[in-house]
Amino acid sequence: MHIENAYRIIPVYTADVSGVCSALFELGGMTVMHDPSGCNSTYNTHDETRWYDQDSLIYISGLTEMDAVMGNDRKLINDVIDAADRLHPKFIALCGSPVPFLNGTDFNALARIIESETGIPSFAVETNGTHDYVQGASKAWEKIAERFIKKPECKKERAVNILGMTPLDYASSDSVSSMREILESAGFTVQSVWAMGDSLDTLSTSGEASVNLVVSQTGMAAAKYMEEHFQIPYVTGVPLGPVKDMVTEQLKKAEKEKRSIILCNRRKYNGQPQVALIGEPVTGGSLAWAISHKYGCSVRLFTPIEKSRELLAEGDLLVRGEGAMEQALSNAEYIVADPLYAPVCPKESTFYELAHAAFSGRCYLREIPDLLKLLD
Image (cartoon, rainbow, N blue to C red; front, top):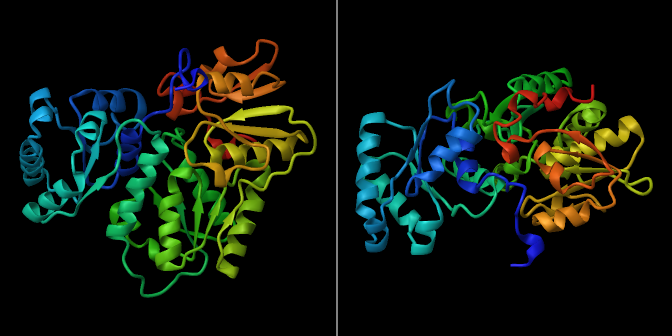
């Protein structure tokens, strides 16, 4: 590993297993992390803002050293079946951590056994605890799309699915209602929200929509699945501040022309970038565009999120590691980022705090604004 890819001071983004749990939290299923113990406490203590307000069936397997060494998968199967017999979840999702990944645990086979013995839809989400939350949430929603979206009898005109909403990117409790309000005022009906405020039954009707709006990279895999299997085009972008009308107009265009539009990467620089913004590529790219429109400045997005290149505008940068981020920011005049990035930012730059729950957890939760209203 190169030293610039290591982390000494700042944290990393929350892991793929937390992404799975966040994506599936409100859908009535049972999510099981196969791990000795640590992942669940990290998830419910730092990552999940809904944990104390509503119930969700999220469990840890309590993998022991002996079970791991001896490959005692039957214990996991029996524990999951016993819990499912008592709780009656709508589905069972299995996800892995580093230990079962190193052991080569076959989660797909385990899911098939559990489904055959319980009759409950069961699936594995390929995680190992070493990737970021976007990878986990994205894979989880793709599985939901594969297993539960019903073939529509008809399409609804101006019906939109919102893909990619979890508290990891939208920590404000007002974000869902703000998103709905903006889209409905533009003439759309919200078919479903993946996955805050809507049930699995509602998500299963997503095939009736005429267009998808991807509001974070976590929704991309589900969007591509629905494009392929239900011919629903998608638009990537967040309708916030000065660009909300542009986003809703592109939704209408995508629906009419039946083609997908990656909107968040269409920014053009009007000179040397004056503002550096660190964040997730869809929310961050949309915010960068809104800042450019409102203040007439150039904004460059730096993102550590994996597999995000197709969502980045010309001049944006995928940055992996603390040293690489420190180097990328070395000439930045203004920086917009989570407060925990401050130690690696140049002292002479002007720093604007914008907390991101997927990065700093609950540390600045009360200070996170409704992103949709940020630049109104």
